Image 1: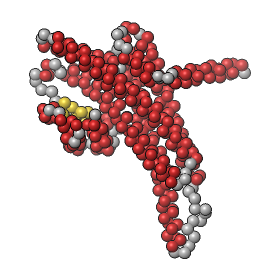
Image 2: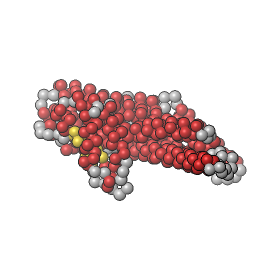
Image 3: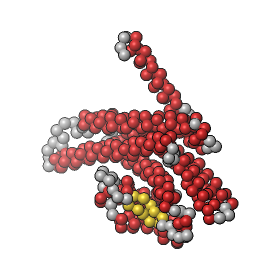
Image 4: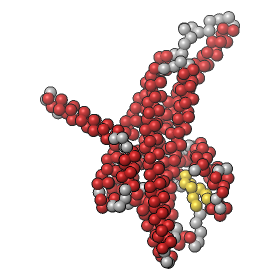
Length: 349
């Protein structure tokens, strides 16, 4: 709800730093503000008192995002049910959901920045390649939002809610502590299995492919930021040039040496550079998504692994509900075969 949005908005700048520059006391203060300033404040006080954060030991090159985790302190007698192994599973589930939220937050933030950049370009009557690059950014961003939001909805509604309903039934039917522990362990195992975080080889391949898609979407946010910074920098330089020209005019000199218009060649060069970076990342994302869809379809065809679970079928359908990717990849395969035939006809290959 609004707690996660408020937390991301407040903690984003801090976690964007290098892991070594992230300090626990700063983030604890941000967490407390997010808890007290959102609907989370209406949770029972004993729940709020047990909420905290965990910072893991950083590896070289890590940012704050890589070492951060929300934490909930479980005390006896609940530790009999939420034991150490169960806590580890909870952390794995959290990291998946947190990363999805982070990517969604990053993509939405860049949408807001893109709107400001577009207004600035329009005010300066700038078009050409930079406008084309921004249009490509918008299309790629929407495609990534489509994928991440559908995966997030799948996890929240199909996986978590369905698993909780099944656990609630088993809990009500339990007659001993052992029954409750068993039901809780099955609840977590079911979430990991349906959430593509299982330990079987096929689940590990799916998890790795999903992580690759998330990595590319995360990197795309950085590419967008560079495009926007470069655009605003170019426009800022032009604004400075215009101010200097105005000062010269006030002194009775010529304002501009040339026609006084924006340096179109510099803007076009910036647009070409930006377009190359965006297109390269977009191609990577499409290839990663193609691999993910292929693995999902393969898992659906494996009845042993997917027996009784239609939720994954709905996810696959939502990701490609109009068969856009299926037709796109089929066309690429046909074009590739056609190219092979042409090469063979010329005695090449």
